[in-house]
Amino acid sequence: MIPEVFESLKTWVCKTIGEASVVPDAPGSAKEDRIVSLYLRKIENSPATASTLKMNRLQMRLTFLVTASSNSPHEANNDLVRLAFAAMTEKDMEADLTPPSTDEWKAFGVIPRPAFSLSVPLNFEVEKPEVKLVRKPLVIDSFTLSAANTPAGPD
Image (cartoon, helix red, strand yellow):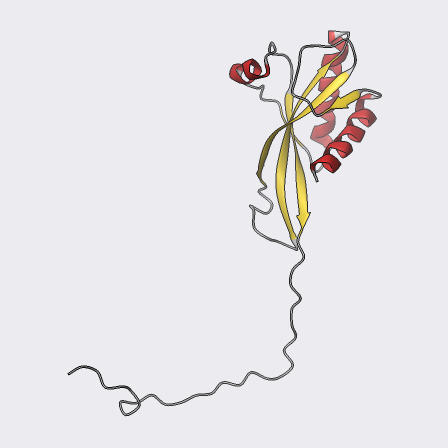
């Protein structure tokens, strides 16, 4: 499931900014090559389904930390801004421009740099059990409850 989402995002990145290496790695130190990192940062409930079954599917949100590097810092920054604007125009994508915390950058072992979070849906189709047709009318047996029908209690 996640590899398919990553491949779809990889295609979207290359369509948006042109030829680049798109990797699922955590942000690393700046490199000589033109690289876009899509690091899976969070898996969350989707407000659309809130982890309940609706219309034969479950949905969650995958949030990726998007960073870019290049031999030219201007090119890397431009790639990142173009991707953020493109994500804002996509129906199923959400771009959060809030930067990662200093502690998060320390955990990656790199100096802070421009980045944004990209959130996309992940759908899971669920096969619902077949609904059986009612072929006969409902029959309800009734009886009258009276003191004569009830068991005797302790006196």
